[in-house]
Amino acid sequence: MKRVAILGSTGSIGTSALDVLHQLGSGFELVGIAANSRWEELAQQVLAFHPRVVAVASDENGRLLAERVSGNGVAIECGPQAAAELAASDDVDIVVNAIVGASGLAPALAAVRAGKTLALANKECLVMAGPILTRVAAETGAQILPVDSEHSAVFQAMHSGRASEVKTVWLTASGGPFRQCTADELAHVTPEQALQHPNWDMGPKVTVDSATMMNKALEVIEAKWLFHLAVGQIRVMVHPQSIIHSMVEFVDGSTIAQLGLPDMRVPIQYALTYPERRQGLVAAADLTELGRLDFEPADLERFPALGLGFRAAEAGGTMGAVLNAANEVAVKSFLAGRLSFPDIARLAEDVMNTHERVPEPTLAEIAAADRWAREEATAWNRS
Image (cartoon, rainbow, N blue to C red; front, side, top):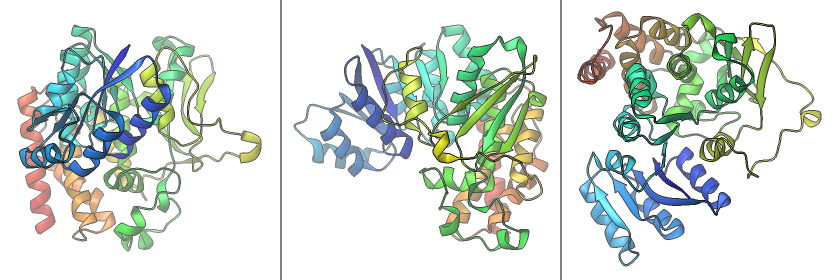
């Protein structure tokens, strides 16, 4: 029996993970779920999936949740540390971390410190603290399994050779809804337009990141730490159909790709059942029906956010935390109508330019860099 906790259960990845667990049935038990503020959706999940524990960030939302689900025998844990405590629980074997943003770092660290299997959908954890997270996992025997479709694809393709035989990892990007837009058109993009992704159904922050290609910038940093790669081994290409999720090129000229329809339930299920595969909810991609697959180089002039990811990956230290924090502030401001679409990358770049990087930071120094970057980004937005 694999005992599972899903953190961020009300988001798009979390709800997909619940669908997968329901489909898998025997051999898996949902021990707990966690979310920040959407207590009404948590209540619906309690009634539908019957977890033993629910972690919610605020006491008030916990009180409202308790009133709605009273009599269902579920334990409700409240507070900013509740998700991390659930992740470290002795009753949990696998932690699906689908929390969006920097707030997912503490539960991820709690899971690996406790030696759990961490099914990681929160790329910000590795962007901010990749060396620390991977080192702790190595010390405790915890396993980090990627849930991002791109990194799951790399993980699967790497089984075809040794790490020393990998020449290049190719991360594919859909290009989002604006890959053919001119600079003038990008200057007038609205939040409503940015939230219309052509292939994927994701939450608002991740969808905007896909539109700016900041999601791919963060994935470059994530890939560096997750697979112990040099930055020069990581490349990005645009693949608008989102059928090939990533590729690994080996030194002998062979390239292994993982293909599938753009549905997050596939990498979620693989992380839960690894090293086995089971019948899933998603049909295979019919290449005869698709007819063609297209590829094009990533345009760093049109999407400068991607270049910031390579820069932060090369710099290391606290630069990843700074890029992530500045981007989170910028995306919120854009969605609120206070910032233009191109200014998301401009803000992040300016904050990076003024940051005094700490080469080998402690967790406290990472947290300090995160706070500093948010303050700088907020001030930039007001100027």
